[in-house]
Image 1 (cartoon, rainbow, N blue to C red):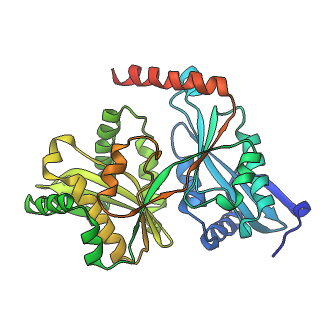
Image 2: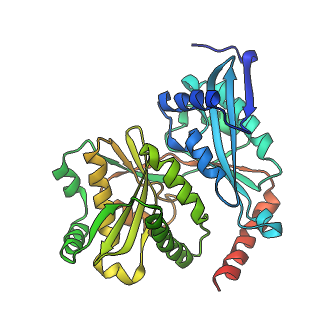
Image 3: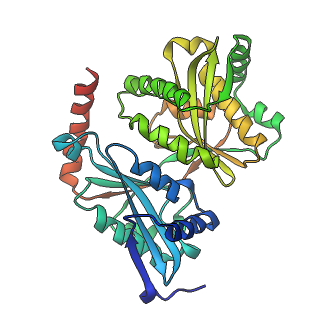
Length: 345
């Protein structure tokens, strides 16, 4: 269907009512590239987080939703630090009916106008190929940068999935079983809080910012109630030693957050968890396991090397950047280093 551009309106979502939510939900659900990050449920999760501000533009043609772009403004505190660390991140958007180029352009233009003045830069993290309309991004002022992800084909037989895992990792997985490690799905808020404490340890060690615990508790309630989020815990002698959160939407699972307590590395929780999650994803009818990012191809990245050892193929979907203020972006890069020093020294 071809839509008259003069009849398309681009509206900021400032509140959700049942009518808008159902139309928005149905649009993303039926879109070939629809992903959980563009859903109203994710909007609600972002809304619950400290220092997060979701920004959503819906494109309407009369009463039909024909496009969506959802991102989130992120800051690391208030005042000068908040300003210097401000950015907007959008995963898997914008989405337009039939990949209509004019609607995509309208979404991008409207989105940039809304976030301009709120952030230093906007980053779009592609979850699928956008080559067919890359020129629209470029003409809108975005810059393209290569970025990788790793996709595991779950349609393979179990034996092939196991064989694709690097031999040393297979050995470590078997050792984890022998050491008595077991993996289970978390079922309570207290277990989520326990896993969050491990997440804090991981992020503190990496000197990286982490969203507040309430965000994950609310995500557990909102997404978990619809089986769109599964939280896995690895246990040794009844103690949670590692975790992995995965998003589940349509036929894909997506590795969201994960890690383990460093003093338990010798029991290989970081090898057992991915295998158990991949196996669970296949058993539950999913077709693809998405590792959620593997860095820039021209830079050495240990996390990419780790993920590749579990099978899967590299895909280059890239990222787009829009610099609202190039000078502040350069200063902000220095400011982030100062933030790391202040918070982790």
